[in-house]
Image (cartoon, helix red, strand yellow):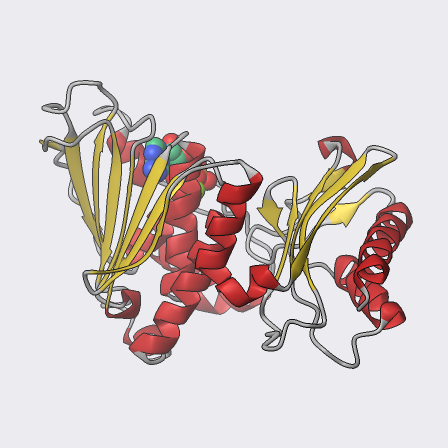
Length: 328
Ligand code: ADP
Ligand code: MG
C-alpha cells in the first residue's frame, strides 16, 4: 500500500498548495465555522490546518488515514499508463506517504478529550494516544517529500510556494463567506477574515484578499434567468493594475477553470471595449446541480454543463449588459 499511496500522492500532492487545498476541503466538509492555516517555509516545513468542525472519533482516526490499495498498480512503471485514478478517500493516505503527518481530533464537546495519530512515510503508527483538543481537527503536515527527494527537488523558492498556498487559500475563502479564516506564514498573520455574508462584509473580504484597488474599480452584478443565477464583481476598465490571475469563477460554490466560461467572459469584455486588458472578476454561478457535473476531475477544476450553449449565452449577455452600462 505504501507504493500505491506514493503513486496516488504524485497525482494529488504536487506541492504544498495542493496539500493545503485538500486539508481545507476536509475542514469545510466537517462543517467548520473557523479554519486556521499555518505555513512555515512556504509549506515545505509545515502545513497545518486547524478547524472547529465535527471532529473524528477515536475509532475512526486510523481509518481517516487508511486507503484501499489499488490492485491495478504494482510498480512505478505502471503509473505511466494510468491517466485517471479516483482520489476519493485517498488524500490523507497519499499525503502521509510523502510527509510526516499528525492528526489530532476531538469529536466531543469536552475540550479535555481528543486523540492523536501519527503517520510517517513508511507507514502509520498504530497507536492512537490521548491528546486534548477543542472540538474539531488539526492536521499537521511536516517535511513534505522528505522521503521522495526527486520530488522535493521540484519545490520552488519559499516565496513561490507560499504564493501558491495563498492562492489556494484565497479561492476557498472566496467560496465560503460564512466561515472565519486565518492564514499565517512563518508566524505572521497574512490574512484574517471575519465571517459575514452581507454585501459589505463580502466586499471587505474581497478587498482584503485581492486588494482595495480591485473592489474600488469593480461593479456588482446580479442576474437570474432560466434557472441560472449569476452574482459577483466584475472589474472595470478604470482598474489600472488588472492582473491576469484575478479571475475567479465559482460554480455552485466550487472554483472552476473552464473554457466555455472563459470564452463567454472574454467575448463580453472584448465586445464592449477593454482594449486588450485582462478581465478581472469574482463571479458566482448557481444552477441546479443536476444540470452540471463539477467532478469531472478532482484536481483540474473542470465542469461539464448539460446545456453549455445556454450557460454561455447567459454569461455573455449578463456581462455584456453590466459592462456596457458601466462604460465611461
Ligand atoms: P475524503 O475527503 O475523500 O473522504 P480524505 O483522505 O481527505 O478523503 O479524508 C479521509 C476521511 O477522514 C474523511 O472522509 C473524513 O471522514 C476524515 N477527515 C479528514 N479530515 C477531517 C476533518 N478536518 N474533520 C473531520 N473529519 C476529517
Ligand atoms: Mg478529502
